[in-house]
Image 1 (cartoon, helix red, strand yellow):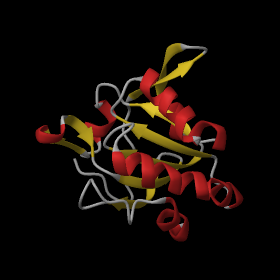
Image 2 (tube, rainbow, N blue to C red; image 1 turned 180 degrees about the vertical axis):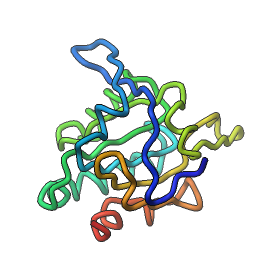
Image 3 (cartoon, helix red, strand yellow; image 1 turned 180 degrees about the horizontal axis):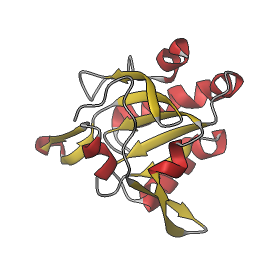
Image 4 (tube, helix red, strand yellow; image 1 turned 90 degrees about the vertical axis):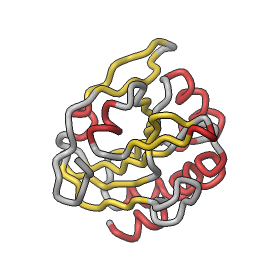
Length: 162
């Protein structure tokens, strides 16, 4: 399935670091009864993800909150230790962005966003996208055509649609 506007987000399990220990987080607890902006990207510490995608949501998180968004979440096919360290290093955690790992690419595959780029060492990763969901239903979806570009999936583009 390739995700589209109007779809209900699937069940899956994310992981995050809580008190220096991995914690399973259900997709239901992330999305149900909440207004959420989720942005997915190819990998923590990768070029465009670090220099463009995450910073765009750091710049706009206050504006999302002013529009009633309950959570802004960064998701990547990485383990919770990497996501936690990257969130701290980029300032995303301090800004209030939740960092979730989709360690087994369960959610990424369920929404049809997986891709691989073996020459870059990226296997079973997430395409670059952003979505806005209310109570688990996709209201806005922005998908980049090229994983090395962050135009339509950036914070400012998503903010303009909400």
